[in-house]
Length: 555
Picture (spheres, helix red, strand yellow):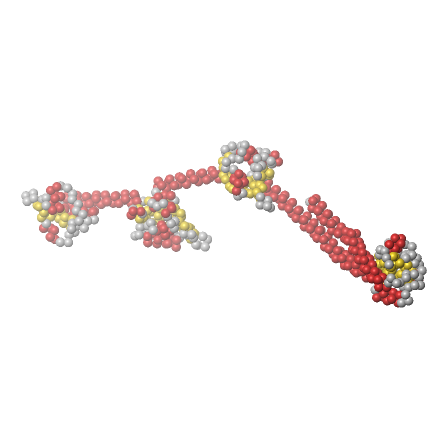
C-alpha cells in the first residue's frame, strides 16, 4: 500500500508540475520566440525602407534632407503601420522624426555608437508601459529598431522605426489563454484520473489483500496436508495440516526439501511425482505406501507457471487413503469370496442397463456360458443368441412380461453353446424402476443345473425300469401263460427304450428254429409266422453266438 501511495503522490506532483513547467519554461520560450521574430521582421522592414528612402546622394545633415522626404516618410509610416519613424545623423542627432518634438535630440546611447555606428542593425522589443531605449513610455508593444545608413562604405547616419508588434503579442496571448484553458482541463482530468486510479488501485489492493488473507485462511483450514515446492524440491509454503504431518512448525519446514522431511531420504524417491512434473510440466497423481508411517497416501501435484509460461513451482496435495485401501482390500476379498462361492454353486450374476442396453456378467456367468468376455457383445440380444432356439421365445416372453407386470420371474431353459453343447440353466430376474415408472435396470442370476437335470433323468429312467420290472414280476406271478408274460415284457420294453417295434423269438429245441412267440408295433401280422434257423439271419446269429447284435441299417 505504501508503494501505491508513493506512486500516486508522484503522479499528482507530475500532473501539477505540468502547468508550472508551461508557465515558467514554455510560455517564456514562446514569448522570446515571438520577440525574436518581431525583431527580425522589424530589421527587415527597416532595412527595406532605408534602401527605399535613402540614396548615396543624400546628405544626412540638418536641413539637407530632400524636400519631399517628409511626405515620403509619412506615407511609409502609414503604409507600414509604423508608430514612429526617425532619421539620425552619424553623431546621433535626430534630423527628422514623425514626432517633431524629437528633432534636434542627440542619442548618446552606447547601443547607438557601439553597435549601429559600426554598421550593424540593432533592435529591441519594448512592451507596453515600458520605457523605450530613448526613455519614452511605450503606448503599445513595439520593436524599436535602428538600421545604419551606409554611404560609400561609411556610416552616415541611422534610420530608426518603432514597429508596432502589438497584434503579434495579442495573438500570442490568445493562444496562451486557450492553451491555459485547455491545460486546466487536462490537469483537472489528469488529477481526477490520478485520484480515481488511486482509489481503484487502493480498492484492488485491498481486495487482493483480503483475497490473499482468505486464501491463507482456507489454505491453513484444509484438513489434508498441502505444500508448495520450488524447482529444487524445497518447500516454500506448507499449511497447518502439512506442518502437523511433518511434526514441525510451518516456518521451520520452509526452505527444506520434501524428501528429507517426508521420506527421510537423501534424494527424491523413484516414484516422486514432483520429479515427473519437472520433466514434462504436467499434473501427476500417484499412490504410495509410507512404510515409516505404515500408511497409504495419494499425492497429486499441480504445476504453477509464471506470466511467461515458465514452470516455477508446484502444489502438492496429500490425502491419507489408508482407510480406503483397507475398504478396497476388504471389497476385493469379498468379491473373491463371492466369485468362489458362485463357482462352487455354479451360480452366476448379471445386470442389464435398460437405458443403454449394456449387459454386465460375473466371471461365473461367462464360465457357465462357455465364452470369453472379449468375444461377447455384452447386450441382451447377444445373450439370446446363446439360448436354445426352442427356448428363445419363452425367455423373451418371460423377460418382457416381467418388466410389464413388475413381477420377478424364475424359469428353466437350455443354452446351446459351442460345438452344440446343451446346458440346462435356472434363471431368476427382477427389474427396478425410476419414480415415474420407467424401467432402469434388471438384475438376475443364472445357475447351471445340467448335472441336476441329468441326475433327475437318470432317476426317472431307473424309476421306470423298476416299475417295468415290477410289472413284469407281477405278470409272471399272476399268469402261467408265457405269451401274456412276453406281451407285458414287450410293452414295458417299448415304453422304456422308446422303440417303434419289438418281438420275441423262442428256440425250438427239436427243429433248432427260432419262432415268434410275441410281437408289438409291427405293421403286418406276418411277423408272427417268422421262422429263423439257428445261426442264420440276424436273430439266428445272435442266438447262436449268444451275443448282442446292433444293426445300424436294416436296408
